[in-house]
Image (cartoon, rainbow, N blue to C red):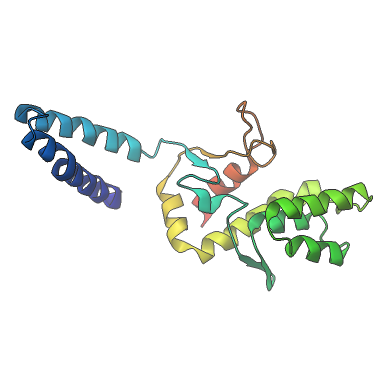
Length: 198
C-alpha cells in the first residue's frame, strides 16, 4: 500500500508539473483552479489504485502476464512448456499418447496446440479418464510454478488483496468469462486461491 501511495504522489507531481502548470502559464487554466484540478486528478488516481477494482486478465491488458496464452515458459517435472496453456491442453492426455503430448508441447503457439488436440479428439484419441477431476489441480500447479518463478508478479497479485480476478476468455467459458459475462472463470478462482496461499 505504501508503494501505491508513493506512485500516486509521483503521478500527481508529474501531472501538476507537466500538464497543469504549463496550462496555467499559457493562460488556459486559471491559477485558482490549479489545486482543484489536482485534487480531482488525485481522487481519480486513488480510486484507480483501489484494491476493490477487479483484476481483468486479457492478452493486451495490465495483467497479460497471467493470461494462460502468454504466461510461460514454465517447467513442470523437469519438462519445459512454452506457456501455461500448452501445459493445460497436454494435461488432458497425461498417461496416454506421449507423441501427442510432445506434439502439443512443441506447438508454435497455444492456438496450434489447441488444433493438435482437436485433431487428436477427432481421431478418437481419448483424454485421460480423470481429466474433469484433475484439470483444476493441473492448472493450479502450472500457475503456482509460474508465480514462484516471477516473484514481482506474485507481489503485484497479492497487493490486489480481495479484488475479483476475471479471465476474459470469450471462447472458453470454463477457463474464463465470455462476452456475455458468463463462465466458470477457473483461472480467476485459482489465482484468487494462490494469492492467499503463496
